[in-house]
Length: 318
Image (cartoon, rainbow, N blue to C red):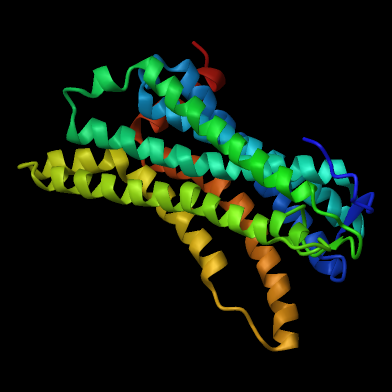
């Protein structure tokens, strides 16, 4: 990734909540505890999917990828956020900012694609159970997961490459906790129309297409479930995809809330909204990764049983 020669700023200042020190202390403790829960919850989920041979299925393979992705996503930004809470007007170099933007953007795009892949897995399991073992064999699952990571990385590389070629010759204060790409683009002293168009196309591909694919998949899934004659059979079939559906609704629902709410035209209201937007974005970055393992654990009998067995074996060895 080549940084532009015309950039005249050596780095950026992350504003964060530097004008509200009391909030910084409170959020430092809150975000730190949340980050530890993310590492523990997703780490345990990865561990149980590896250690228990009964969980060596496509659904849990993708779940393990999702947990690893959540750890990577939060680790790419949360340590920087925590450091910013302890350091007023935290500075970050231009190259470090570009790397952090690349990692965060890549993880976000990858999760969008991966959730679509998981929807296809549930579609095959419920709508085509006889073909499921053939279609969703190990080589196919690995290819699907790898393509999710590659697609997210390639998209991020394009967006960040375009961003770092812009000249930054004016204000170098980023009104955010991290190097959020939209906040960085606002500081460029050049036309960013190409960046806006590129990100718009990427949003259609990585947000619109997966949402449409998931929506269509669940129409077929729900239609198939409703055709099952027994109530117990319908309940069992729905339970296999309820956790994924819950995660999808929370993930995309939060995105729609963040970017769909109206902007305030009042200057004072705009300042307050800047703070609320930053906090919403921050909690979005930690809330989803924290909820994912909780949702899959609570709504999945196999995971709960495996975790209980591992805990009992560790605490009460025979």
